[in-house]
Amino acid sequence: MSHTIAIQLENVSKTFGRRRKRVEAVRQLSLEISAGQVFGFLGPNGAGKSTTIRMMIDLIRPSAGNILLYGRPVQNNPSLLRRVGALVEGAAFYSFLTGRKNLEILARTRSCYDASRIQKLLVQVDMADHADRKVQGYSTGMKQRLGLAAALLNDPDLVILDEPTNGLDPAGIQDVRLFIRDLVEKQGKTVFLSSHLLSEVEQVCDQVGIIHNGRLVRTGVVAELLSTQAIIRLEVAPLERALGLLLPKWPTTANGRWLEVQATRDEVPEIVQQLVAAEVQLFQVIVQQQSLEDLFLAATGGTDA
Image (tube, rainbow, N blue to C red; front, side, top):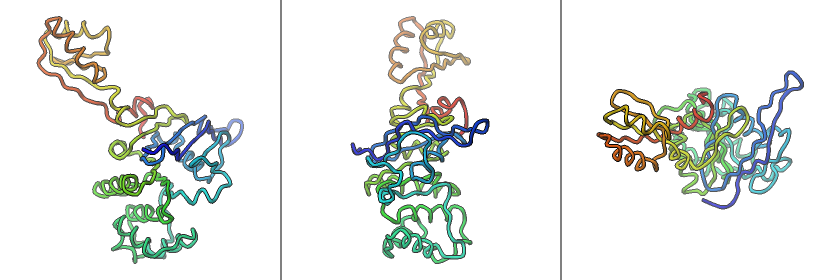
Protein backbone atom coordinates (compact mmCIF):
# COMPACT_ATOMS: atom_id res chain seq x y z
CA MET A 1 0.00 0.00 0.00
CA SER A 2 1.29 3.46 -0.93
CA HIS A 3 2.41 6.01 1.68
CA THR A 4 0.82 8.77 -0.41
CA ILE A 5 -2.23 10.17 1.37
CA ALA A 6 -5.12 10.25 -1.09
CA ILE A 7 -7.83 11.59 1.24
CA GLN A 8 -7.42 13.63 4.40
CA LEU A 9 -10.32 14.96 6.47
CA GLU A 10 -9.38 17.22 9.38
CA ASN A 11 -12.12 17.80 11.99
CA VAL A 12 -14.75 18.15 9.29
CA SER A 13 -18.26 19.12 10.37
CA LYS A 14 -21.41 19.94 8.42
CA THR A 15 -24.52 21.55 9.88
CA PHE A 16 -27.77 22.14 8.05
CA GLY A 17 -30.49 24.56 9.16
CA ARG A 18 -30.57 26.95 12.09
CA ARG A 19 -31.75 27.03 15.67
CA ARG A 20 -34.42 24.38 16.32
CA LYS A 21 -34.08 23.00 12.80
CA ARG A 22 -30.31 22.72 13.12
CA VAL A 23 -29.01 19.27 12.14
CA GLU A 24 -25.41 18.18 12.64
CA ALA A 25 -24.94 15.75 9.75
CA VAL A 26 -21.19 15.30 10.23
CA ARG A 27 -19.31 15.99 13.46
CA GLN A 28 -15.57 16.56 13.73
CA LEU A 29 -14.74 13.80 11.28
CA SER A 30 -11.02 13.11 10.90
CA LEU A 31 -9.82 10.46 8.48
CA GLU A 32 -6.61 9.70 6.60
CA ILE A 33 -6.66 7.25 3.69
CA SER A 34 -3.53 6.07 1.93
CA ALA A 35 -3.47 5.72 -1.85
CA GLY A 36 -3.57 2.31 -3.53
CA GLN A 37 -6.37 0.63 -1.57
CA VAL A 38 -10.12 0.12 -1.39
CA PHE A 39 -11.52 1.98 1.61
CA GLY A 40 -15.02 1.05 2.77
CA PHE A 41 -17.16 3.79 4.29
CA LEU A 42 -20.03 2.31 6.31
CA GLY A 43 -22.87 3.66 8.36
CA PRO A 44 -26.64 3.43 8.92
CA ASN A 45 -29.02 5.52 6.84
CA GLY A 46 -28.68 9.14 7.90
CA ALA A 47 -25.25 8.60 9.46
CA GLY A 48 -23.57 11.22 7.25
CA LYS A 49 -22.05 9.07 4.49
CA SER A 50 -23.49 10.91 1.49
CA THR A 51 -22.91 14.30 3.09
CA THR A 52 -19.25 13.41 3.60
CA ILE A 53 -18.87 12.24 0.01
CA ARG A 54 -20.51 15.39 -1.36
CA MET A 55 -18.09 17.51 0.66
CA MET A 56 -15.15 15.47 -0.64
CA ILE A 57 -15.99 16.37 -4.24
CA ASP A 58 -16.89 20.00 -3.40
CA LEU A 59 -20.60 19.71 -4.12
CA ILE A 60 -21.27 21.19 -0.68
CA ARG A 61 -18.96 23.02 1.68
CA PRO A 62 -18.13 21.91 5.24
CA SER A 63 -19.23 24.11 8.11
CA ALA A 64 -15.83 23.55 9.72
CA GLY A 65 -12.62 21.64 9.08
CA ASN A 66 -10.50 20.91 6.03
CA ILE A 67 -10.66 18.35 3.22
CA LEU A 68 -7.53 17.56 1.22
CA LEU A 69 -7.07 15.24 -1.73
CA TYR A 70 -3.47 14.28 -2.45
CA GLY A 71 -2.33 16.98 -0.03
CA ARG A 72 -4.25 19.85 -1.64
CA PRO A 73 -7.47 21.55 -0.44
CA VAL A 74 -10.47 20.45 -2.45
CA GLN A 75 -12.34 23.75 -2.23
CA ASN A 76 -12.01 26.09 -5.23
CA ASN A 77 -9.59 23.68 -6.87
CA PRO A 78 -11.22 22.35 -10.07
CA SER A 79 -7.91 21.07 -11.46
CA LEU A 80 -7.61 18.75 -8.46
CA LEU A 81 -11.07 17.29 -9.08
CA ARG A 82 -9.89 16.17 -12.51
CA ARG A 83 -8.04 13.43 -10.63
CA VAL A 84 -11.35 12.21 -9.20
CA GLY A 85 -14.11 10.08 -10.72
CA ALA A 86 -17.37 9.61 -8.84
CA LEU A 87 -20.62 7.67 -8.90
CA VAL A 88 -22.72 9.36 -6.22
CA GLU A 89 -26.36 8.72 -5.27
CA GLY A 90 -27.12 6.71 -8.40
CA ALA A 91 -26.30 7.22 -12.04
CA ALA A 92 -28.26 9.89 -13.98
CA PHE A 93 -28.26 10.04 -17.78
CA TYR A 94 -30.22 11.45 -20.69
CA SER A 95 -32.84 8.75 -21.12
CA PHE A 96 -33.53 9.60 -24.78
CA LEU A 97 -29.88 9.01 -25.77
CA THR A 98 -27.93 5.77 -26.01
CA GLY A 99 -25.49 4.70 -23.34
CA ARG A 100 -22.57 5.35 -25.67
CA LYS A 101 -23.81 8.82 -26.60
CA ASN A 102 -24.20 9.70 -22.91
CA LEU A 103 -20.60 8.73 -22.27
CA GLU A 104 -19.43 10.69 -25.29
CA ILE A 105 -21.19 13.85 -24.06
CA LEU A 106 -19.79 13.44 -20.55
CA ALA A 107 -16.29 12.87 -21.91
CA ARG A 108 -16.46 15.99 -24.07
CA THR A 109 -17.69 18.14 -21.17
CA ARG A 110 -14.75 16.87 -19.12
CA SER A 111 -12.30 17.44 -22.00
CA CYS A 112 -11.29 13.78 -22.01
CA TYR A 113 -13.02 12.43 -25.12
CA ASP A 114 -11.42 9.22 -26.40
CA ALA A 115 -13.65 6.86 -28.40
CA SER A 116 -11.36 3.89 -27.84
CA ARG A 117 -11.38 4.44 -24.06
CA ILE A 118 -15.17 4.67 -24.05
CA GLN A 119 -15.39 1.35 -25.88
CA LYS A 120 -12.85 -0.22 -23.51
CA LEU A 121 -14.85 0.93 -20.47
CA LEU A 122 -18.10 -0.37 -21.95
CA VAL A 123 -16.47 -3.77 -22.32
CA GLN A 124 -15.07 -3.67 -18.79
CA VAL A 125 -18.48 -2.97 -17.23
CA ASP A 126 -20.19 -5.53 -19.49
CA MET A 127 -22.26 -2.93 -21.34
CA ALA A 128 -20.76 -3.16 -24.84
CA ASP A 129 -23.74 -5.14 -26.16
CA HIS A 130 -26.19 -2.55 -24.81
CA ALA A 131 -24.23 0.64 -25.51
CA ASP A 132 -26.24 1.64 -28.59
CA ARG A 133 -29.65 1.23 -26.94
CA LYS A 134 -31.43 4.21 -25.41
CA VAL A 135 -30.97 4.53 -21.66
CA GLN A 136 -34.74 4.70 -21.13
CA GLY A 137 -34.77 0.94 -21.79
CA TYR A 138 -32.04 0.17 -19.25
CA SER A 139 -32.62 -1.61 -15.97
CA THR A 140 -31.34 -0.05 -12.73
CA GLY A 141 -28.39 -2.41 -12.78
CA MET A 142 -27.49 -1.44 -16.35
CA LYS A 143 -27.57 2.24 -15.40
CA GLN A 144 -25.25 1.48 -12.48
CA ARG A 145 -22.81 -0.27 -14.82
CA LEU A 146 -22.91 2.71 -17.18
CA GLY A 147 -22.35 4.94 -14.15
CA LEU A 148 -19.18 3.03 -13.31
CA ALA A 149 -17.91 3.64 -16.83
CA ALA A 150 -18.81 7.33 -16.55
CA ALA A 151 -16.84 7.65 -13.31
CA LEU A 152 -13.73 6.35 -15.08
CA LEU A 153 -13.89 8.40 -18.28
CA ASN A 154 -11.11 10.76 -17.18
CA ASP A 155 -8.88 7.90 -15.97
CA PRO A 156 -8.95 9.24 -12.39
CA ASP A 157 -6.49 8.45 -9.63
CA LEU A 158 -9.27 8.44 -7.01
CA VAL A 159 -12.61 6.72 -7.64
CA ILE A 160 -15.50 7.48 -5.27
CA LEU A 161 -18.39 5.02 -5.46
CA ASP A 162 -21.63 5.45 -3.53
CA GLU A 163 -23.64 2.19 -3.51
CA PRO A 164 -22.27 0.99 -6.89
CA THR A 165 -24.05 -2.40 -6.73
CA ASN A 166 -27.59 -1.02 -6.40
CA GLY A 167 -29.91 -2.92 -8.72
CA LEU A 168 -27.40 -5.64 -9.58
CA ASP A 169 -28.07 -9.36 -9.27
CA PRO A 170 -25.60 -11.58 -7.34
CA ALA A 171 -23.53 -12.28 -10.47
CA GLY A 172 -23.39 -8.56 -11.21
CA ILE A 173 -22.34 -7.77 -7.66
CA GLN A 174 -19.48 -10.24 -7.95
CA ASP A 175 -18.45 -8.69 -11.27
CA VAL A 176 -18.32 -5.23 -9.70
CA ARG A 177 -16.35 -6.57 -6.75
CA LEU A 178 -13.70 -8.01 -9.07
CA PHE A 179 -13.77 -4.82 -11.15
CA ILE A 180 -13.08 -2.69 -8.07
CA ARG A 181 -10.17 -4.89 -6.99
CA ASP A 182 -8.72 -4.65 -10.51
CA LEU A 183 -8.88 -0.86 -10.34
CA VAL A 184 -6.52 -0.98 -7.36
CA GLU A 185 -4.35 -4.00 -8.07
CA LYS A 186 -3.93 -3.65 -11.84
CA GLN A 187 -4.49 0.06 -12.48
CA GLY A 188 -3.04 1.54 -9.29
CA LYS A 189 -6.11 3.57 -8.37
CA THR A 190 -7.59 4.37 -4.98
CA VAL A 191 -11.26 3.51 -4.38
CA PHE A 192 -13.48 5.08 -1.72
CA LEU A 193 -16.52 2.81 -1.46
CA SER A 194 -19.77 3.48 0.38
CA SER A 195 -22.06 0.46 0.55
CA HIS A 196 -24.69 -1.17 2.74
CA LEU A 197 -23.78 -4.69 1.55
CA LEU A 198 -21.47 -5.55 4.41
CA SER A 199 -20.51 -9.00 3.13
CA GLU A 200 -19.35 -7.44 -0.14
CA VAL A 201 -17.41 -4.71 1.66
CA GLU A 202 -15.72 -7.36 3.78
CA GLN A 203 -14.52 -9.15 0.65
CA VAL A 204 -13.39 -6.15 -1.39
CA CYS A 205 -12.05 -3.57 1.09
CA ASP A 206 -8.59 -3.25 2.60
CA GLN A 207 -9.67 -0.83 5.33
CA VAL A 208 -13.02 0.40 6.60
CA GLY A 209 -14.39 3.31 8.56
CA ILE A 210 -17.75 3.20 10.34
CA ILE A 211 -19.68 6.44 10.82
CA HIS A 212 -22.62 6.75 13.21
CA ASN A 213 -24.60 9.90 14.02
CA GLY A 214 -22.06 11.89 12.03
CA ARG A 215 -19.04 10.63 14.00
CA LEU A 216 -16.38 8.13 13.06
CA VAL A 217 -16.72 5.29 15.57
CA ARG A 218 -14.37 2.62 14.18
CA THR A 219 -11.64 2.49 11.56
CA GLY A 220 -8.85 0.12 10.63
CA VAL A 221 -7.61 -2.74 8.48
CA VAL A 222 -10.47 -5.17 7.85
CA ALA A 223 -8.53 -8.31 8.78
CA GLU A 224 -7.25 -6.73 12.01
CA LEU A 225 -10.66 -5.44 13.06
CA LEU A 226 -12.28 -8.82 12.50
CA SER A 227 -9.58 -10.69 14.40
CA THR A 228 -10.00 -8.64 17.58
CA GLN A 229 -13.04 -10.54 18.81
CA ALA A 230 -14.50 -14.01 18.25
CA ILE A 231 -17.11 -16.38 19.61
CA ILE A 232 -15.52 -19.57 20.96
CA ARG A 233 -17.94 -22.48 21.29
CA LEU A 234 -16.87 -25.23 23.69
CA GLU A 235 -18.54 -28.58 24.27
CA VAL A 236 -17.63 -29.42 27.88
CA ALA A 237 -18.53 -31.44 30.97
CA PRO A 238 -19.29 -30.67 33.71
CA LEU A 239 -20.81 -27.46 32.39
CA GLU A 240 -21.15 -25.69 35.75
CA ARG A 241 -17.48 -26.09 36.62
CA ALA A 242 -16.36 -24.73 33.24
CA LEU A 243 -18.80 -21.82 33.44
CA GLY A 244 -17.62 -20.82 36.91
CA LEU A 245 -14.00 -21.03 35.77
CA LEU A 246 -14.37 -18.82 32.69
CA LEU A 247 -16.93 -16.23 33.79
CA PRO A 248 -14.58 -14.10 35.94
CA LYS A 249 -12.48 -13.23 32.88
CA TRP A 250 -14.63 -13.75 29.75
CA PRO A 251 -18.32 -13.11 29.00
CA THR A 252 -19.69 -16.66 28.84
CA THR A 253 -23.13 -18.16 28.31
CA ALA A 254 -24.33 -21.76 28.56
CA ASN A 255 -26.50 -23.64 26.10
CA GLY A 256 -26.98 -27.33 26.79
CA ARG A 257 -23.53 -28.98 26.74
CA TRP A 258 -22.03 -25.91 25.06
CA LEU A 259 -20.45 -22.72 26.31
CA GLU A 260 -20.16 -19.61 24.17
CA VAL A 261 -17.22 -17.44 25.17
CA GLN A 262 -16.49 -13.93 23.87
CA ALA A 263 -12.73 -13.73 23.54
CA THR A 264 -9.99 -13.18 21.00
CA ARG A 265 -8.61 -15.98 18.88
CA ASP A 266 -5.25 -15.57 20.65
CA GLU A 267 -6.90 -16.36 23.99
CA VAL A 268 -8.13 -19.81 22.89
CA PRO A 269 -5.00 -21.69 24.15
CA GLU A 270 -5.32 -20.03 27.58
CA ILE A 271 -9.01 -20.96 27.82
CA VAL A 272 -8.30 -24.58 26.87
CA GLN A 273 -5.39 -24.83 29.33
CA GLN A 274 -7.52 -23.55 32.21
CA LEU A 275 -10.27 -26.03 31.48
CA VAL A 276 -7.88 -28.98 31.19
CA ALA A 277 -6.08 -27.98 34.40
CA ALA A 278 -9.45 -27.96 36.20
CA GLU A 279 -10.17 -31.47 34.86
CA VAL A 280 -13.04 -30.27 32.67
CA GLN A 281 -13.71 -32.67 29.80
CA LEU A 282 -13.36 -30.86 26.49
CA PHE A 283 -15.00 -32.48 23.46
CA GLN A 284 -15.04 -29.74 20.83
CA VAL A 285 -13.63 -26.23 20.29
CA ILE A 286 -15.12 -24.09 17.50
CA VAL A 287 -13.81 -20.59 16.85
CA GLN A 288 -16.25 -18.34 15.01
CA GLN A 289 -14.54 -15.14 13.91
CA GLN A 290 -16.86 -12.14 13.87
CA SER A 291 -18.05 -10.85 10.54
CA LEU A 292 -18.01 -7.25 9.38
CA GLU A 293 -21.75 -7.24 10.06
CA ASP A 294 -21.11 -8.23 13.70
CA LEU A 295 -18.53 -5.44 14.00
CA PHE A 296 -20.85 -2.93 12.36
CA LEU A 297 -23.80 -3.77 14.61
CA ALA A 298 -21.61 -3.56 17.71
CA ALA A 299 -20.22 -0.16 16.64
CA THR A 300 -23.61 1.34 15.77
CA GLY A 301 -25.65 -0.15 18.59
CA GLY A 302 -27.47 -2.61 16.35
CA THR A 303 -28.55 -0.12 13.67
CA ASP A 304 -28.79 -1.57 10.19
CA ALA A 305 -26.71 -0.16 7.34
